[in-house]
Length: 219
Image (tube, rainbow, N blue to C red; front, side, top):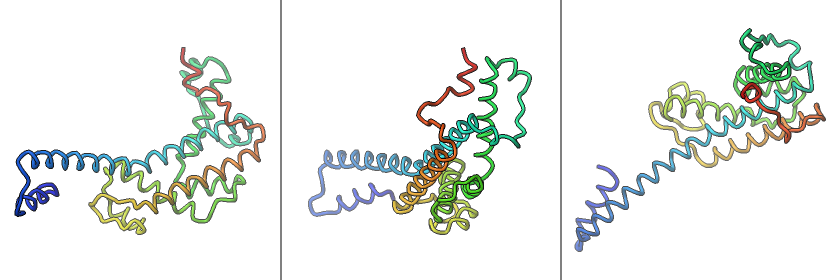
């Protein structure tokens, strides 16, 4: 029996049950509340997805911008351009931008937050809070479950992230305290990475972004 059916059953059993009009109104109101709650739960679950997308995009853009100033960043990169990419490029600069964005994307895709933080540490970014890596790993795991499993926990997820108390086969719940941990860890990641980048590459002007390679090649 649904929540609204149980509520209406209890109301009908009272000494002075509601009229038909009132029952109809209550039914409509409860359905709206249920729809709102469902939409609210959906938005709540998708916050981690949006947060991970922001962090990945931020790091990719920063690395691509930094590579324009520091040739050593891509010194060991095995980037290659196809004949079609070379032929369609409007200039050598646009082709170089394409390869920088591709290298930055590969950097971001090379592993999870712990791996990325380790690589950034070796580059010189050494002030991340101790808990940031673990909280971001959990955030990445939540994003994967929401996107690929509609929010339903797998056995691997439940075992890997016991702090969430997830049950295999059931939709994960994210307490506000844990969501706040994700936002705090994300802030630490961006702040620490940005501080390191500005110190290592003083000429890096984050506000004045160049066009993306696709924009350079369009028109």
